[in-house]
Image (cartoon, rainbow, N blue to C red):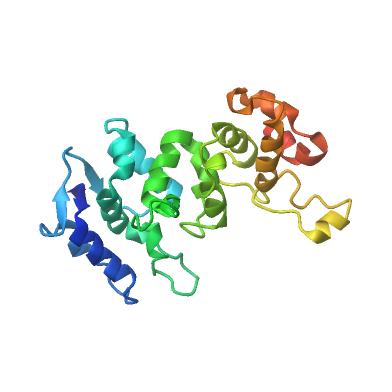
Amino acid sequence: MVVHVRRFNEAGVKEFVAWLTGGSYDQYPLALLDDPVLAEPMEQTLFVETDRVFATTYELGKYLHDEVFGEMIDPHLLWRDAGLWAWLSLAFMRSLVKRAGRKGDGEPLNPDHYVAVSESWHAYRLMTRQAWWMVRNHGEGAAIALGSDKSPWGEIAENICGRDDIRTNKAFFAVATTLYLDESGKLLRGAAGQRNKSAKRNPRSVAGLGAMRRLTKTLNQFGVTYAVRSMPTDQIIGLLPPHEYRRWTDRAGK
């Protein structure tokens, strides 16, 4: 169903939070979305299709950027509009809950993934806002952090989006997109792995070598000598230690 985009007022946010923390999730309180007492219209005439369901948070972010907001609204004002993001969280709740096959399927995550409960600490966890911001700034590279079809907000999203030095690093996303995404934009097997103690003791093991966790450290090390954030992607990839990254660079043809 196509509806006008609205924003929750303070009372609307409180009602939404009350549902998020209430423990009963058989039905989503979608009636709040067009309640004139709780939700007010945007200054701009914008529309969303509330019956759409997205397999990944990245796909939702792409939809919000490409088909809803585009470049027509000041991104700084948009980021600060807490009532808007809370409203969108409820509008797309079916895409933002625990995935099928897991305990509590269909239940929401913690409230800070849906409303701006703390701008100073957990602001990055607000999924609708973060998804839009990541796509706006990193394009298809946002799938690196938000492309999981197992969880709307997994460990990779937390580790990447929770660190400003990574989340805002276009060089990281450009390199990671080249190395770790397949032709369909999905994360390659092993890209999110880590080198455990057993692998470290086995010189023949390639587990975790050159994966994303290591890439962030490698780029930080390069930053001591090189202006990494302004270097061409191919040039950065050319600096990666072959013994560690060959598995990924060979696949990418680099």
